[in-house]
Amino acid sequence: MTFHLKKQFLVSESALNKVLSVCRTCGGHCENVVKFAKGTMVCVASVCSQGHVFEWKSQTCHNSMPWSNLLVSSAVFFSGASFSKTVQIFNINLQMFSMRTFMTIQSAYLVPATINVWETTQAEMLEKRVGQSLTLGGDCRCDSPGYSAKYGSYSLMDLQTNEVLNVQLVQSNEARGSTHMELEGLKRSISHLEENDISLKNLVTDRHVMVKKFMREQHPNTDHYFDVWHVAKGVTKKLKKLEGCAKKKGGEVIRPWIKSASNHMYWTSMSSGDDCGLKRAKWSSLVNHVADKHEGHSDLFPHCQHHPTDRDWLEKGSRPHKMLTAVVQSPYLMKDIGKLSPVRQTYGLEVYHNIVNHFASKSNHYFYTSMLARLYLAAMHYNENSNNAKVVTKDGQQKWHISFPKAKKGSEVVVKPCKTPPTYGYVALLLQAAIDRRLDVPNHLAASQEGKEIMGEIPSPITHSFVAVDKSELIQNHRSRFC
Ligand SMILES: [Zn+2]
Ligand SMILES: [Zn+2]
Image (cartoon, rainbow, N blue to C red; front, side):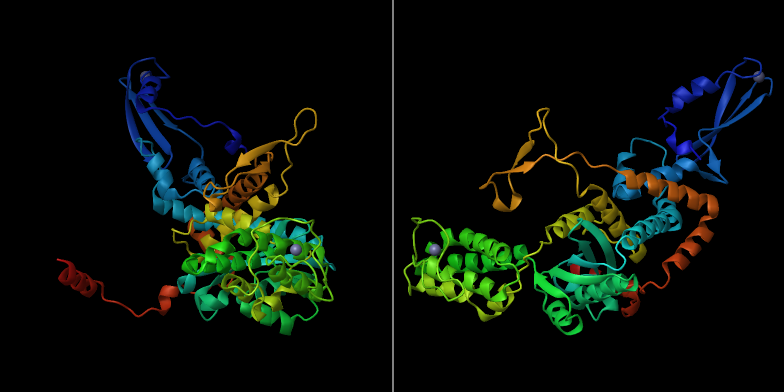
């Protein structure tokens, strides 16, 4: 099947009439009758005065389905676009199929093809790691903040190779509410790896309370570390709050130390190996350092390692110093400082979650299988592009571009290495899989049914647990309140 490699053209109705107005048999004039359009395809019949009939279709079909219906649907789905927006683009009187047709093709061919390709790709990745003990990063993405999230997706990434190895989708009604989704996702991810004879040497996550407890109790042989970015973000937030709410009480003197505290945390984690005590000692020394005291910190870390500097020091024992000390040396934080990841961080997972946002916008609603397929699409895109080569100039110099990080609101400018543009090799695989699936199961109802069987058991929709409602009564109530 190579039809999908052929070019496609937009043809206006008048241009089409021009071609078909001449009889191919006698050269006489024909009246063109557009018989019908089926999605992207137009099917015409022309008759001349001699009665010669000519029938023509604008593309090839498989049974009754025009192939371009599958192609356009695939292009929309595999690129992470939304069909409703795409329809608006086609709103130039361009012949297109309905949302209903798109949904049918999506569930019958595109979702099963995506799941199939991901599972094959994933099996190859796991096969290469059989018997190994890995350093993994894990994180959960919720589709909305707080307690209202419907889906949580848990992802495990091989931090050595920067590849997403496992993605689990948890619906809130599967896990005693949205707060339990993260732990449930992690449990499933770990089980899946263990079933494939892969174990966890190190796991790097944020400081999720349930995850901490679970790892401590159920996986004592895995070293569980905390991602520095997450911990530093928490401390920065607390210090900013202090600085903000305590302005009247001299809290603004804390401001210059917020960035320093974050840097100090990175340095602490990177320079102490696996020595929990040393990490705590180094971190804790910050409260002396900010007060211009650089010696006599502790036995493990007796003095600062920096060159002499001149800063706006805090006065030891002053109110701002006490407030900063309370944050830096809070027992809860100190406990976790010992577990700051010395290995690798989970930044890649943040990038992956941004890609998920592209494939599954938080403002749209998706059914379970469609959501799962979108997570897999994002994982395939990430895995193909996460290690994109850095661009170098002709004389071998690294190329850089200037960037203004959004979080800094223009107050900071950084340079980032230029990388080669993304590639989409996975889309070619997916398209082929969708075509093969159509050829195997030409009836989309049967294909949808078979797709459900491939998926196995999926959680029942959350709405099933809601109380049945009387719509007309609701409308009545609404009117009486607002009219
Ligand atoms: Zn004719
Ligand atoms: Zn110092």
